[in-house]
Image (cartoon, rainbow, N blue to C red; front, side):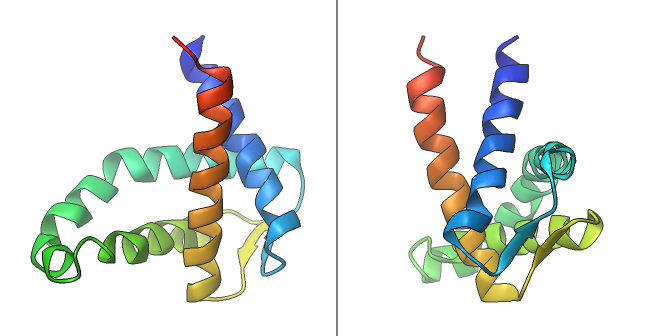
Length: 113
């Protein structure tokens, strides 16, 4: 049940990003559901490998390279899901940042232990 609620929170977060950042486009709620699921899978399976492989760069940039990795994951999912589009790389970085902040805030409110 908690996993389903987390997925719905991420869907709402993704659906809210285009209202705050005009360079991100989500067609409808169904697209947001699919994209949120794919973002969760990518962040669970691929992101840890990328973080490990780019650890020297991440250390040199004092952790700021993680924003680049998050943007790349966001951009990759936007390229895979039709109806979900990002205007460019920096829009993906900004969209990933907004997505994370909104998702974190909603999770803090709704997923209390």
